[in-house]
Image 1 (cartoon, helix red, strand yellow):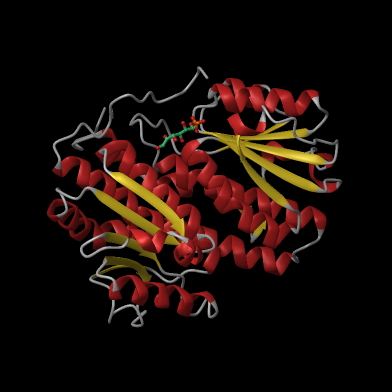
Image 2: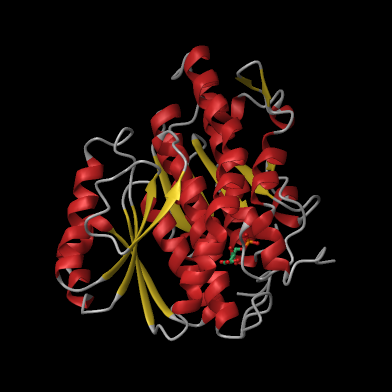
Length: 369
Ligand code: F6R
């Protein structure tokens, strides 16, 4: 039931605040992170020397985002691997490796086979999944459910923000067990997480119409580029994937630091480029670098759409459009910056008259290789 929305995707994007809130529910108490499903399973986390995150598509971008938090908070080295690449290359797995799989459906064949393989090799496995009783969680040592609710549209939206939320909870849980963050430090981050749903709701309330308008004007666009840095990088990849997937427009996401290593050659007059700008307060080092990327592409004629924190005026001279997100700590910006990109992809597909829920050639869950 679309509940009065024009599509399941529109409904599911509108549910992004609840997807985060429901994934947090019952898991933060007085600033402490307690994940009831992981009770009695401390051994999975205390002796590990590395983490490998495996997933496909959007879930893999959630994993890439989670890597920053896992490394920063839990001080464990993290690799993020596409499940189909992981399982066919004889990866080195030891009992002190924790494999974290991420899957909305819990049925993605490549992810399932990678989890089974990891277990056979003696690694520990935790699954982050949105579907109760699905196959991947059944094959794992532990499960952290995302509570995004059923996702019907083929393109993943609310599950993505819920996956990042679950990874951040897991990262804080591991940090607590390993003593890499103090209780006070965990409380600060937990508080930031709890503030996310309201901030997403604010973006939906204040920016949605403008973004849809912008998408409408861009109905004839043939190519869109996305640039981001640090946690903004996986968000750039996610913005590009969503646009390809539902609006059939060529789109690429790049790490902003790569610009001079090739992608800047693509910039010609009129080329639309979304740039995810890190907060000037939170990322004093990276903010000016991304602003200078904007100036470089603007000088070559790009049409720049910046996603920037409220009050960041440094982007104003060179950006053609600025989409605003509320203030948040650096690691929490991706949960906000992705929302305009989901709205944009949906808006552009709608402007082209496409079925946003059922894009051509795609299935909601990929249970074959
Ligand atoms: C993109 C999308 C896909 C899925 C991928 C993994 O919008 O939906 O890229 O993220 O197929 O699916 P799950 O999470 O079910 O394993």
